[in-house]
Length: 473
Image 1 (cartoon, helix red, strand yellow):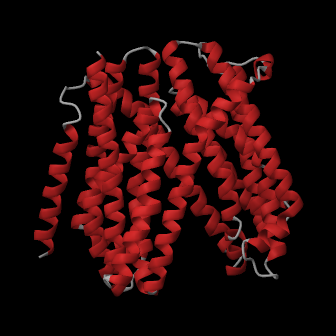
Image 2: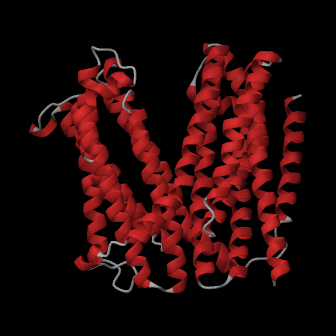
């Protein structure tokens, strides 16, 4: 029965892949695929490292007890606000810089990077001052128990104090990604994350003569790791890449332009809203799933974590295609942009196939990594079979979203995501879980429909854009 179901899902995926390939029938050169892999693999490793860093943080803080984990966990929500803003700005600079690289316009590149640095610094300092002054009140607002507030507020103050370093590092790393220096950005992230683990070891436990600070030590370690990353970014900005269009002198940082600041901030708003939309959708789905029961929610979390592993590929390729499309458009070569889009789509299909096969044929093994509860494993196996159908759609939609950002269209991905995850997913989840009594399976059917909707919507948008281009040629 399981084998027949797996074969059926595999056939559906093959049909979906054939459908996607109708987006472009031309064969791309090997050089294009080599470029995609060379620029994309460091981004994939970056995504993995960032999650491993969080994983090690939790382990090291977890050794202090549940009390410490709770205190740190409460700070996640206010810190997410800052992260959403920084990610929005980062996404915009990747597009802008890749466009200017295509034009070989070092002047505009430096102006936009300088203005992003100025904007990032201003926003981060605002949140830092706010966090340092009102940390206890913010923790109470987040629902912290009175006995946890002093610990969580102390950790929050240490982290928020270093936000300026994170913001500046994020701005410079984003610019480096935009010009294709993904290996450099990977090196910076690797060293920064590695230093975080070392600082955790020194300051949480008081090793090698350093003060034993407990939870506050973890916060201090986080800020110090941002400073390490920022130091590397400054070295690259002023002393690296002799022939690069991103090589600054001090006076380049003073070229602040109000029109450029407005352009960056306005362009980043749809990206920020897209992130907020995803957060809303995830929280609402989690709320519905929790209400089903403890074991179903555990299965939901197991499958979500496994799906996130496959999502790393989509996000890495999305950033990759953004840079190549931006460069091609900047170089006035829209045909090359389309070739990169097609090639990235095919690369995404190939890269996501192992996950589809794993979800279909070894679901019990995968679920068993997270839990030994047989009931949870059984539910997870069913969901992984469903997820195998969804995964290629999710990956390809993510890549096409990246392509649209490369064209400078930040609104279309945000609109489609908002409709899917804020409207369609919650309504369907409510109907399937509560009205039709479909329990956990109903919740995941809603998730799948949302993902397929977003895929079809962005494909339709892309096809319409191609038709309009052909009519104007």
